[in-house]
Length: 61
Image 1 (spheres, rainbow, N blue to C red):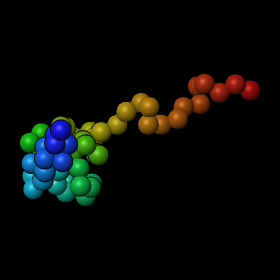
Image 2 (image 1 turned 180 degrees about the vertical axis):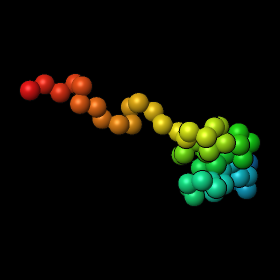
Image 3 (image 1 turned 30 degrees about the horizontal axis):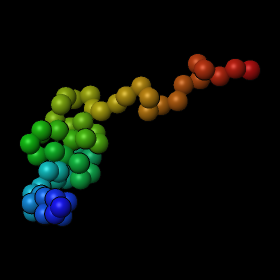
Image 4 (image 1 turned 90 degrees about the vertical axis):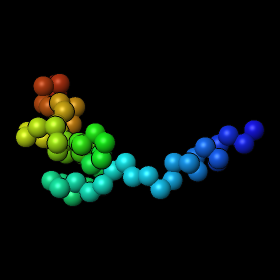
């Protein structure tokens, strides 16, 4: 029954994310070579989704 802490202790010391060159956030994935915050590394346009901005199409008067 000692599965939790012993398994999690093996994960320490490894870096998955470092500072991003574009946005400065600590979300650039080393192995994926892509920033999870701004999308740097996957193209020049950046990370943007339709659900991030509110639209006025659904409003009723």
